[in-house]
Length: 111
Length: 114
Image 1: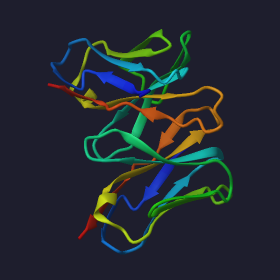
Image 2: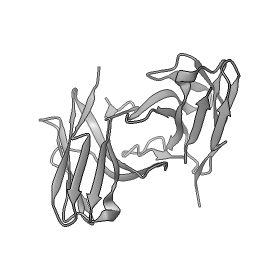
Image 3: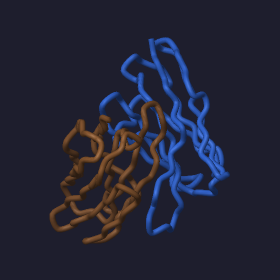
Image 4: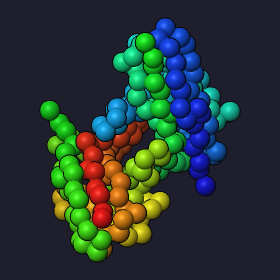
């Protein structure tokens, strides 16, 4: 059974600091996704990572994928308050197009 | 803009009532999904459909049923609602044949069962 674990579950950080959110998954997968969710809102797609060593960056967020370690990271550089949200990783279960989600990381960026 | 819409956005109902949540999309995608989100948890897949004649159970299908009325419409029904079905429900779509299989989510329906 594919399991996806994120840590930390909650992250409080100060503006200007750097931090990393980790996403571990239990079995082989072809694709990994990062989504952002604002309170009471829908999920917004941030990154799609398709292969080992893939790295994508958008603004202050950078995502990477290590398929051998079954690990993806979402790195936040010089955090700003607008990045406060819940971040989910999701894994495509053996290319079946069914996503298995992690429990999410609630990020609170304090001024 | 091509979009995914859900109706209603909020619903309060009583135990034992039948409820239908509707999802429509103008993205032209073949694949549609229903997810449930509970507070502090990730999303769990309820049902999914890869085309009009294809319906598949997800992780937590018990107590739910679905109907794919057309390529653009996918409805979720709770035949006899119970309080632990109180949750936020999301519909999503994706394009068949896409190497990314990126899923696009609707705004969600907040369902409360009393």
